[in-house]
Image (cartoon, rainbow, N blue to C red; front, top):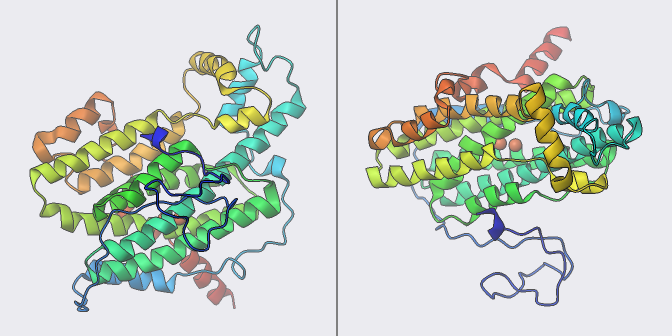
Length: 383
Ligand SMILES: [Fe+2]
Ligand SMILES: [Fe+2]
């Protein structure tokens, strides 16, 4: 599926969309944009009654926990891009090990190159966060338009604002403190553009609130554990507080919808989860990082895999565990593990994913994890 999505085309004389439609108004030749055609219907609702108390609670919570990137974060701090994380990312220790293998393309590397790799890895990670957050903003906006329930429209509008702020803070942190951004990875493009194009409104929820937000929470949590840089740490805590609500929004909404779905419709959702999570398992390191370092990913990968085999695990093992420990319990709560005689349960059992069935409970995280409210309460009691 990813091959369908190419990197954003910056230029080209034939400025036409995929369906031969003219270039949208306001998009200039040479602009680094991507036109996406959405196949979902927009739904206008005349039912204004507040009928879904859990969504009303989430909406009120979201309204009260809005924060401001300019006044709530201290951008004046100096950041050393080489020391943003306290330790090296796991892939760096594998690269050090791979460099000792005879004939390694990294054999000539010294501390200067390894330090640059560390910075490039951070830039690549923050870049994918930034692009993913824009994707979340677009997806939340799509939900505002396509979900039939007024309470869900209201909530998705707050999420759209949250995701705008997340995009903005990662973009600013990257450009002010770390360096140039990398392009959106083909993997992430495949994930997000598929959601934006899909005609079924719940797929935007399933793909974003359930899969990608679980990925994001795992990735943000891992980076937060590894950094004591105060600006990034606070930014991540605040972003994660918002994300915890977004996951809950997905669970509450889809729970209601999936209770009324036919077996055939549920099977489609189960297939969607199989396709999209297996792809995550095969997620590999950003090739552009290696190209920046002057080696191709094809050259370097055999040595990295050999090093991973020697130390007993791959560079993404901890991350994958964190991801599935959030994803699998939420999918169970939606009834998708057991629908159709346990179709998804059987599939995931073969991939060893059922060990996560009763892991983290992120659907209720927003009640306990609200760093914004906690900081405000502490400031009030100190005053
Ligand atoms: Fe976000
Ligand atoms: Fe989010």
